[in-house]
Length: 226
Image 1 (tube, rainbow, N blue to C red):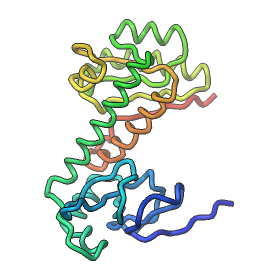
Image 2 (image 1 turned 90 degrees about the horizontal axis):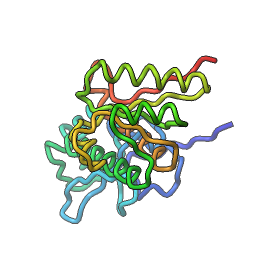
Image 3 (image 1 turned 180 degrees about the horizontal axis):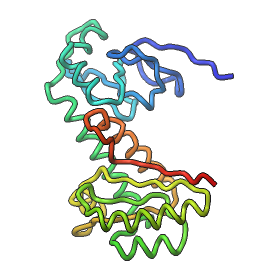
Image 4 (image 1 turned 120 degrees about the vertical axis):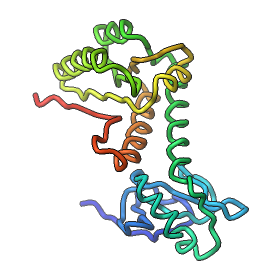
């Protein structure tokens, strides 16, 4: 049995880890991981709190770009906090940028920890050598190169009864900057805590963006049926 308790749309922090919070726009009660917390800066500006750690009362909005845009247009932050709250018209875009920055930062840390390999041949070799936690492609990578790696990855993971996680939310330039190499089109991360964290960040960014696209591309997992 799982006991859940609804929370108000605004709060004073994420003290009850795992407790649900209510989206101020949709009024749905969800796990905090499916929401974005916003707080007020000292000058009453609405600030995204992606780590859910900033002090003060917070307003929770579903991890969906359209919901953030609606919150800005409807003056939801001021209504929830019952005080002046200035939300910039580009707040939804700023959230996207912050998520990309966090994802790039995690990829950079994973690379420094020796968990990343890059380049078509090196990724293919890594798949042959041992466990791979996630395969990455630049968002604009060619379909041919992607499909060759993906087929191999899915076949290997499927034979082991493991999930094949594939991420393509970062551009080639963003991947290159994070890894510190030029023209990184394909990469892979071997298992580790930072690889798990990267997947969590990628999944959140994909969820945030998926409402704005028909395909919802960016992050996918395939699981063997065996």
